[in-house]
Length: 238
Image (cartoon, rainbow, N blue to C red):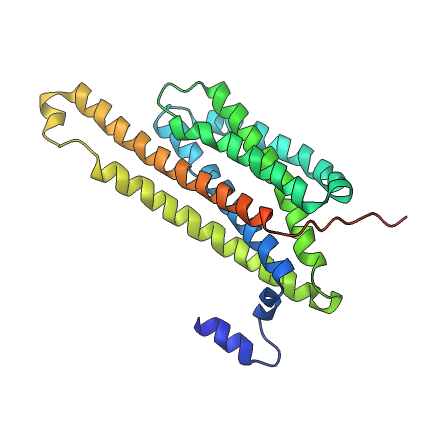
């Protein structure tokens, strides 16, 4: 709050927060932040699940998620081409629906979930992210006057970096707290080691499920903001 007030009083602000007075900039930016939080929420947590719960090596867990990055790279230029034809709203709705579709099954994940299922779901999520990111960023920037473009870019990038850092810290803390609060009694490790290991694993999986639910909520709220936004369809100038 102090930072915002300070920036509003400066003649040449370090970060011009006045750009958020433009509704057509603010709504796409909020949707973009929610998509970013949904992406990093699982992107940073999933390797931990694969290594700690499934017992995969860091290399194998990285290869499991590799296809998501590949599909994101493929979808980005496709989303850019579709933006000029269908507009931000429809394209973003499809992107968030893909994100929700790819995230929902993670809520029911367990220690026996096949790796191929995780790979496919993660790829679907990243396709949704790619379908959302570029059009929302373009729509936000296009809503501002040319002279405010640099301020809009700075505000957009700053919020994305801050939100991704915050969500990773919060979700990591959520997993750890849930695992600790639901961990079996230490005495059980001496009387029944196998049961202790099973209960400790269940507590950890429960933590991952809660995080996936939170990431799903980010996607659902992001979809809501897209639904209330305007369909800024931009035609290509020939």
